[in-house]
Length: 115
Image: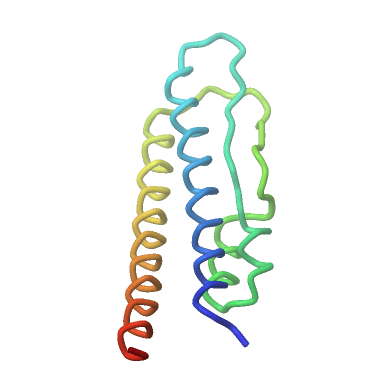
């Protein structure tokens, strides 16, 4: 049986991965003029696809195959592209925090109803 605690663990993992990706993208922008800097990114499709939920499976198909920091071969960092990736990542974080809020509300409801 699937419980809210399982959901909470999954959302926590998603939020952690999103935060790691935000740090990697921010580092890319901070090092835009650093000679020889290799762009980093985090794709966490593998983690999401293992969660056995249609939503996570759809997200994993869009987000890519790997859940580790990828160092791409050297190429010039495009600030506009990095900012767009940061915005998309921010939207994912907003979705995850809303989901976590819903899980907590559900748990509070169950506790209050069972009194």
